[in-house]
Image 1 (cartoon, one colour):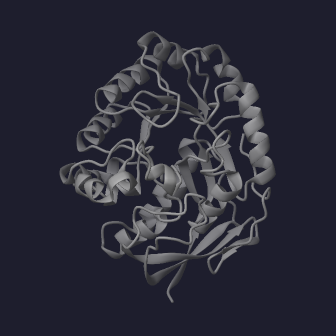
Image 2 (tube, helix red, strand yellow):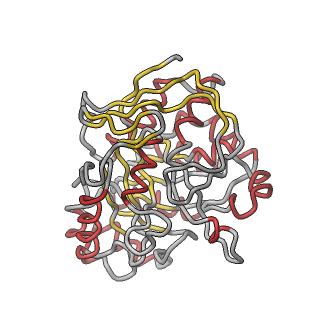
Length: 352
């Protein structure tokens, strides 16, 4: 066994389905999955039912997280057609504002330019605006970032051209950061055809040209984020399968496998999955008594079953990976070891 210690990881893009769809995931199950994957902090998305677009819903969601989360949690506020006047109130207790410009799962999507401009003008910060913006929508958002001087974070970049455009924006000094997901780094459109509904996600899996481009331009990427989006097997196998796949428990093993293949370094993992996420979202520095232990020599096959996430499946099932989380220490307490989550619901902290 070759064990190394890494700081507690941060996932800046997690869907926990609270409120409204806890049969898919809740704070207790989702944060158990996070700990099993080496994440000690996660940021939860607002496209819930109802969506987190008012101070009242945000307060209720924060209270649920405080009572049941096993690791630290921040919660995004969601942009809606009619809530720009509430943004200053939402900013006090959220990790950022999430704006959906392209097709996704859930009720939040803004198509109206005037409404989008109003949100950019009203959001007080200092947390960034996180956006689901693909292709032409991405160009629109970069223009608004320049006009309003808002810090923006581009979620789940999936295309080579998108990352090239973000690189040009960075070179010109625009306040923009971005993330890529393990599924867009490791899977392509051929895998989507093979996986059927278990390969359906937003943004969709792209061509091999685009997938390779994400690796080639990885030096322009700020974060690796899971976009953990759990759905039940029955939902995925229905006539209208919802988009999204779980990812909290497979992200680090996949990235460690990339290290073994020479595509990444341990220093890059620390930067992309801990240091930069904390810097971008103004999160507390990782505490000295919070860390994870990883067996970098463990070779294993990702299973079909046996997950902490309530979804209970993985699109990477059957893939051989190298590297496994052995222990997680949160504020000096062992909360995960030997594939067992020991953290009690409520021991996590709610950020902001």
